[in-house]
Length: 280
Image (cartoon, rainbow, N blue to C red; front, side):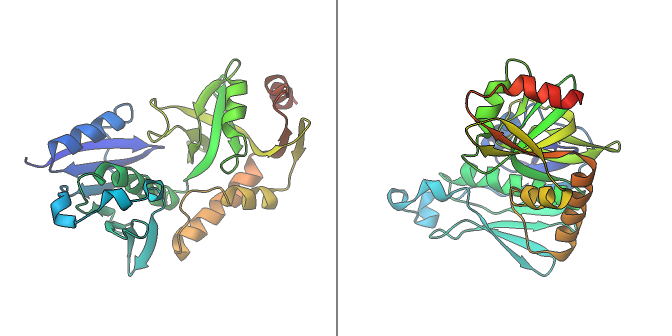
């Protein structure tokens, strides 16, 4: 097949995917179908053809599938080289944020799609860092275009909170949220890795989740909020320029947007209390 290309946009960042296999092209077209774009791309990704199992000698019966998402990042000169977790330790490809170029290397056929999606998510994350945004372990809801962000690690109750709010609020995203400034305002975005539709809302408040036996909202200082948000950001990397950009974004964000620790129980009247908090 001759090269085919498609463009996808996440949180205002547009990428052009270049592919040489028809099934991979239609796979990505389906994953990103509500995120396709005609904008000028911010970066490109060359996605190389798959390898056969005969070419790799991969023994799938010994493979731990739970490791697929735990990719490793190493920086050499101006490029970030991306590796699959041990024991595979495949070189997945590279991301060059200065030249705005990425490459996903040929991978075993059976693993190609499973490794491709985390690689693309990392590509978008690094270019979000570059533009003052990031992906975050969080859920998000909105009401009348006003967005609320619920931040916390796995098991903190993000999905529980979103499910409890779904009758009175519009669910924007669950588990993974993109955040970036747009037209002077901090906005939160859905992503194609967890959601089927593209959604955006202006961010009003941030809640850092804590399970408890009661419901309480405690406003916290910006520096504490910035630290806790940082600990829930996806794929932080060892790069001075990107880290400095990210820290400045977090400091500005935590000073601009009110942040609260939200202590909650399963039976807490979340919708009503969040509405009351927003009206004050």
